[in-house]
Image: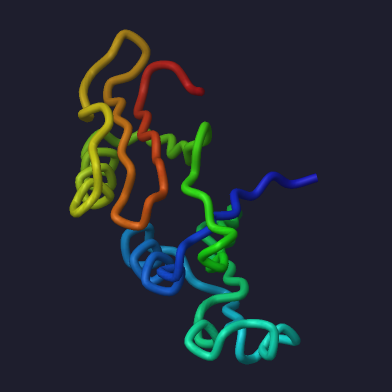
Amino acid sequence: MKLNPHLSFDGRCEEAFTFYEKLFGGKILFTLTYERSPMAEQVPADWRKKICHTTFAIDNMLLTGADTMTEDYRKPQGVSVLLQFDDVAEAERIFNSLARNGEIQKPIQETFWAVRFGMVVDQFGTPWIINCGRVGM
């Protein structure tokens, strides 16, 4: 079994995954729009270029995502994507990039369990936790 996070978006999936690809240095392996899927006729015309499914890989990890129809979309609640770092500079770089045009929930700083820890919701609505050093989570 593998555990891979799947992110839902309100129409900005392509923009988000392009941003994540540049930020994290991984690669988008697959993207399917609604217009190229069997669901093409089931979605409004202005939604057909939106993402039905995309897969992003970095090292041996996968992150998938899709645009969820507006009436079905719900903001993430009670869940965050945790990124664990060994390098303080890299943790701070990623945190600051995710925070740009987003919302900082807890500024990145030293805690009793980590050299750096911070929480942020990025500009696409995805909640992230950045943890670096001392105690692995």
